[in-house]
Image (cartoon, rainbow, N blue to C red; front, side, top):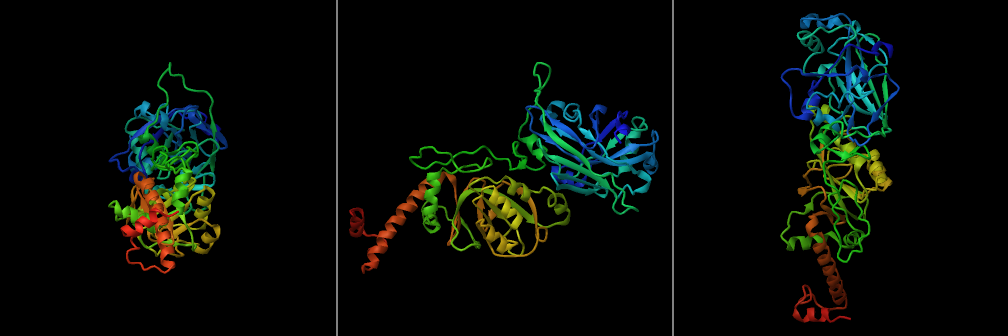
Length: 508
């Protein structure tokens, strides 16, 4: 296999070609477009690819590769497939840190050594239906891409015919036919596997798994010689597939700024608790105050300040007596639709990325459109959130594996148990955006507090003022309760009139 691809004359790659990828990107081309990759980027299965020093956005793209068998020049679409000798797996690796500099040519961003692994085996093109070839990609054993050539915007034969209008496709030339939804960033240590097969063809021919391991480079780019890597949120969004992530973890975490700690008054500035994706991290003294303050008191103080829509309605603690305090990370589900679930529901979807990225002290808040007839998380995701140090989950939908999630001990507020799996009612659409959960608007970084009375949302700008007032009111209410218990009537005592307030303020 390695010798077959030592030096193909040309490697031509297709830009946007799958409907699932086009839907993800929000644009659909009217015609195919292409770029060239250098022949020295070819690599065999079992090799490594280096993420250069000073870069963060190396991305995988599992693809179907076509190997030209007989020269093609000005061939029609009906004859084009006869010029294809073989089909195999490819990984069209690219470095988004250099993409803007390339201005569409992809010379540097896609031309690195090892950026075009192929193989390991060839499938005879005569043995497969070009409209029914499957491509799948795994990262560290987890399926990230799963699509079929039937999902292409343009048929495979059209690439051959179209390119032959412009130049001769020669024996051994390679056409990389584009990648489906699910392409994302990989980091050093990740192992990427791509397989192309035809499960419905006689004998189910397969390329075998094309395996590539990511390593870290240590030679920086020299800015005196040319342009150097540069990234922004646009490139991060494109590279991750939906939303950016912490480059050190390889986990999608959403396009959110670095933590902006929310302090308590008189804080000695200890380290705040909150993951790297948080808009706000809670210092321990403020968190301690929130843990003492009941939601009833906090909501009363919010109401006094004109905030009447702070309640996440219809949810209750899966474990009686649970109290949660944390900063919000958000996940939005949209109504189920087959084509959208195909593009966004499988592989490393928004739900999995968020549970992989949630940080210590953060609470995942899920918009499930107040539909309790389907599960929005189960035991595996609960285990992951627990391991990451999450403070809990709030969902206005149901919970699968309800008893096991309770046993795991992750605090969850939901509408109760439901055994269904993802896909029955929901598509995991996006994370770390403004959502509606149980009738309340929730933004990433909002402060979430839940107890036996329910769950409320506190804007970060009000949290210190609100919690201090709530605790002061709790102290006052406790004194009033003691007076009532001693036999005093509530009239004039609850709320305090001038006489009783004077007594309260004069208490020892």
